Length: 130
Image 1 (tube, helix red, strand yellow):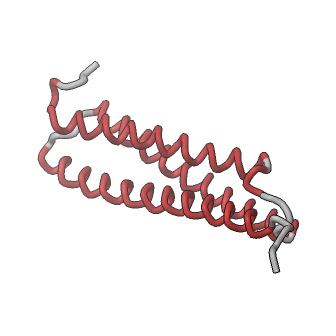
Image 2 (cartoon, rainbow, N blue to C red):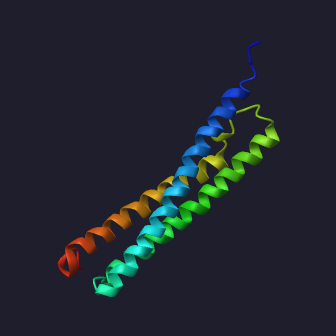
Image 3 (cartoon, rainbow, N blue to C red):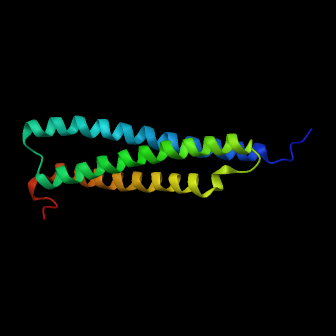
């Protein structure tokens, strides 16, 4: 018998959205841990400048916000899916969509800031200094 209610598509869409958000949460957590170990190594060598610390804190803040928004997106998708019984695609609802987009955008901001931090470490005190 063929499912014409569209609930299979809704559940598949939520699963795909869930996978994206979970991967962003995992990557954000891993980058925070990696940058923490890099920071401890570079502080002992005296290679960290004040502006790179600020960029790193901005990166951590963006990744932390990405994790928080991702968790909120997962919870809202789960709640809407349970409430609607899988009858319609909940990934198009404004709240989960906005939270997921926010998670993606803050992840991108965190990644750019982390790359700027790495460039600052790679080129030393002369690179990118204000």
